[in-house]
Image (tube, rainbow, N blue to C red; front, top):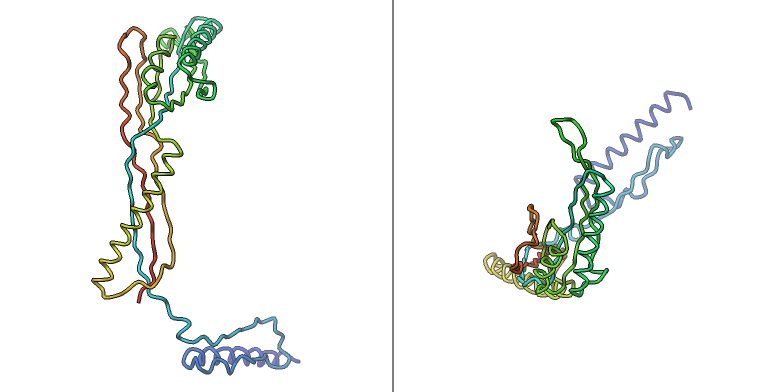
Length: 268
């Protein structure tokens, strides 16, 4: 086949595809007639293939839907706490500051164990040794050592006594106190929030359907989002002192568990 014949064949293919597209666009009922389309003799299929499907208007129709968001929030009193506290020491020699810090932290841990806390309830969250620098004389004048531990407290009545006992034993830093709820409580509250979210979505959908004169036939899809603030955070910047005799007051407060359901209804 010479070049002229090849050009004619390619032009014939393009014209055939263009004609088929015009027929599909303006006469969809005739689509089936072109399912046996073939390339002209001498032209390879490497130019691509075309597949046509006779789709009825009924099967291609988009279902009528209505999207509703329902939210349920349950408030619950906190039932556990996490306290982060520690020991800060300083000295001219690093070894002396480290040794003093270790002795005080050991006393703090022993005091907490005397209140009933175990090793599983306590965890080291930070330990650092740094230099104390005097910028006026531009020289290192000492060393600072900080050791922080986190205490998980399941009985809120022990939060104040734990801080007091640790302070008396040598703890001089409180980084934070946070309050939360146990996994069991969170799960129970989540189920209640689900019920509240469903009721909220249902009441909204009923109002909308009545106003628009439509009815719900079924549910197409449901997606959820769950929000549980794990703690009511309280931060302490100042050092604590063992000089006070009164017990440390602690107010735990409440937390909220929120569930949001995004429901897509099929309507008619």
